[in-house]
Image 1 (cartoon, rainbow, N blue to C red):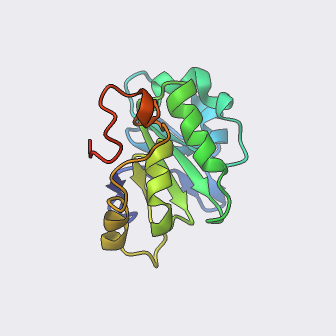
Image 2: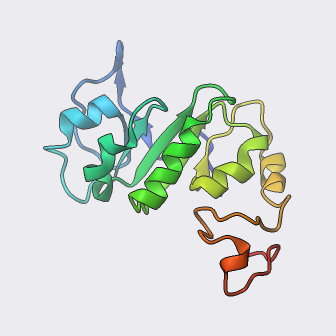
Length: 168
């Protein structure tokens, strides 16, 4: 899991005085809202790294045809008890085969690390009051899981090496 320091993040949102720019110009490592992306995707040059922030109430299918062009999809947890972004991440990985970075943003707590990893997230921006050391430690609490997930799709009993708690 990659932990993102928002002050040193190379991915930058495009905003003006009144909020997100309606029609941002292409540049590497732009992190666009879904609306911004829909406004510029027709002109966005191939090969210029772009990311999209997908609200947790948006349908992942809204990005399906564009996923090969995206390097990053940032999913939002507006409240730590709202788990819709877990489902979005799993759909991106399993149904749509997205290989880029899936980033958790918003109310991301240390307690969420295991489930974030199991559903397909590979990067997180922790809430400001959360400790990085605690998040790293939380990822090692369990050596394995009986059920399948995005990393190991098959349950333990169906794997060739059924060691449920072997680290891989």
